[in-house]
Length: 240
Image 1 (cartoon, rainbow, N blue to C red):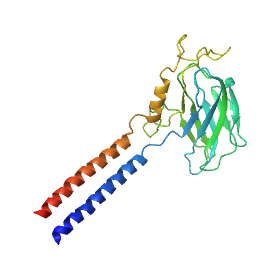
Image 2 (tube, helix red, strand yellow):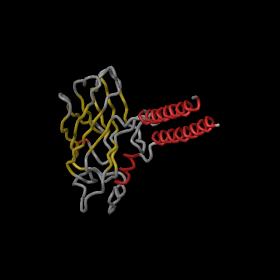
Image 3 (cartoon, one colour):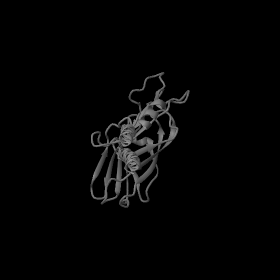
Image 4 (tube, rainbow, N blue to C red):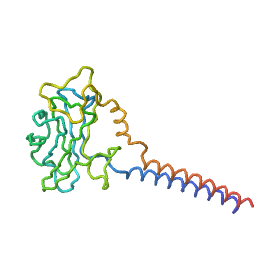
């Protein structure tokens, strides 16, 4: 009777090992660093595009106060005068500053993100734009989203709080800076920027292979191989 029970016990132990390994892998993947908490979007945006709508979303990181203001430092090639407010939280308004603008108003509810949009007269002749942002809460706390972004777009304690970045596609054929447009740093006459921006955008979104997923996969494989070896050993011992 004991010879019959041992393999069954081995099967149960092996199954439990696999389940534990899968659970561990999933927990590792789920606890990987979160995405940046201030984001900017402009679908299909290209260098030198005109009247482009930029949509910003700022998630809250405070459990005690709501967002009350977002101050943006504009990248090279965009001046405060190039920005027009297109809408946001009720009661909020845009105020130009020396290096950008501030969107502010009544404090948001605790836990509620702040989303707003602005229109840019013309995007500069660059491959990407970083919009450094100072996020202020009703209790005076300020989150500084001003650090360079990691390739994956994630943030952690080591890399601080990355500024939201907008990657631009190459300029349309024949596109030219508007009269009086602010000169863009790094612009080279005759060179269309962003030739490799699409590939760069894919790399930024994917960030290459996710280390957490790789670790999880290795844990599962090791558990499977170890479980099979243990089960065969136990099965061999029971037949002896």
